[in-house]
Length: 270
Ligand code: LER
Ligand code: MN
Image (cartoon, rainbow, N blue to C red):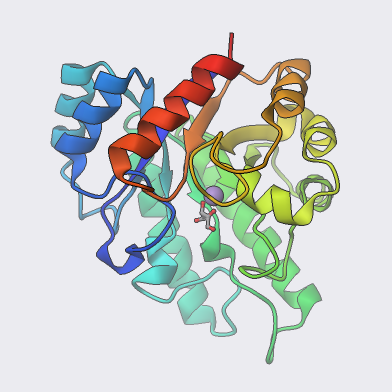
């Protein structure tokens, strides 16, 4: 298992659960100093970041890009894959395709979290799930052609009303036409929705493609009341080789949150 830490470049997301906020150079430098393997980038969009700057920072600090978030499509542009308007759904897919291209430059998968949207109003639950299925079929294939997985993130009930548990998400992935979509197990969301986080991870098995490594209060691992030992046992049991990526509030400050995460990572991952 490898360690990663998030950086947000999205001003509109201030107050959100990202560790670093002060630009890529500072985030890469601090991540490297603390011993992380990778950085996860939450960018305003594919055009907003200079790709050669990212490549240079990766080289200079010997870091990978763990994943790229697509949530700015929702936060900045109000786009979702289950919007009632087909024009908005197309724009959402265009945005995600561009983010898949952006991440694929460094073999980093794109994450679909808040871009999945919600059902309600004129969109029934069944229709929303059909729209999400069509989108994940299309975008999953697009990612596959670029040599990366597409990562789907179930969220807690306060952020989505679509798929909230790993079990429901596994079942949903089973209805897709391609097998290139993997699940993001965000321990904060799981702490709200799962009866047993470790068992849920075992149920996810080889479909678990990424972890948001964070505690119950969305602070760094170790700063809340999640019991991480059984979770790490479950990840070992499923032979998980991906990232434990810190998607946590910068509390009490970014560097301390990152350092606390790294302390937990070293304690838990042998
Ligand atoms: C949102 O709560 C979250 O967990 C992000 O990873 C999704 O974009
Ligand atoms: Mn997350």
